[in-house]
Image (cartoon, rainbow, N blue to C red; front, top):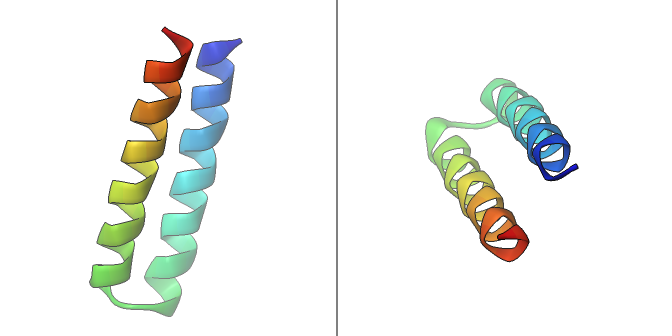
Length: 48
């Protein structure tokens, strides 16, 4: 269950990063990547 949630979150983040790559510069993409990683880490910390 937890791994499925993480997988969906990662998929969403990759889709968002692809969307941002076509629209805006790398700075915003890097910001999104860090946000996604922090979200994944916080989810993992809450689940354990």
